Each structure stands twice: as C-alpha cells, then as structure tokens.
Length: 145
Image 1: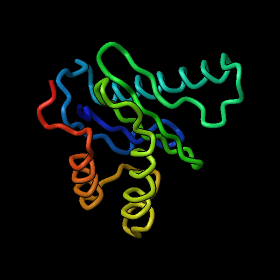
Image 2: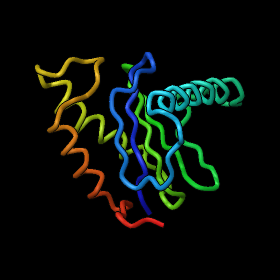
Image 3: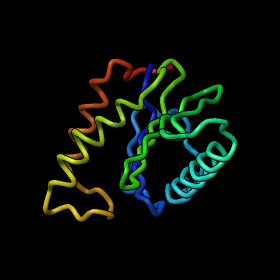
Image 4: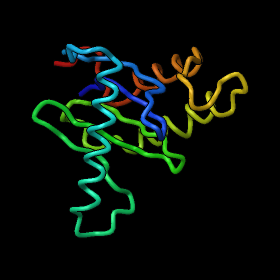
C-alpha cells in the first residue's frame, strides 16, 4: 500500500501545491500541462457524475480507480480540491484528505499571516508537516511495488 502523489487546486483550477512520494512513472509532459490535464479530467468527471447519478449527489464525486491506481477526491466548501493518488489497496482516503485540509492546510496556511491565500503554497512548515503526516499513514509504504 502506498501514496503516489497529492495535488491541491484552488477553485479556479490553479495548482497550489504538488508533491509526490512513490510515483514510479512520469507523465512525459511538463508539470503545468499535467496540472491542467488533471484539473480538466476532474472537472469533466464531476460534471458527468452529477448528470448521470440517479440520486442527489450531496458529497459528489469521491474517487475512481483504474487497473493501476485509485484517485481520491475531496472538495472543501470554499472550492479547494485535494486529490491523492494511491495504489489499489487503499480503500478510501476521503477522511485523510479532510484531515490534511483541517489539521494542516488550515493550521499552517490559512492561519499563517505570511501565506497569501490563492497563491502557490511555499510554506516549508506546511510541506514538512504534510510529508510527516503522509509517511505516518497506515497505508504508506516507502517501497511500493
């Protein structure tokens, strides 16, 4: 079990933060292009799910999986989007993404007067605490297959 990477997007589709832990394969395109593709894919999937669902989607799109990885999605009321890619053995990381938002993002970004909301997250404290948090997860393994 492992975590491959984490994206944080604002409501306008700008990637505020990105980090990877156990990513085996690179996309072969620039990071900016990868961010645009990821956000566009999420926008399309959310739209598709909301239109096709027979039920009222209060929580909306939560995750999807391919034959190689699972993408976990959490959107805050303010429009921040947290996306974590893991291997298939991680069943649901929504609570983990909520903890990243409430315990790390709010504490080290929102409450930090030096950090400007809506801009790239350059807080070394946030990055180090997030890294420690991810490495401490029960489903994190530094040597994933």
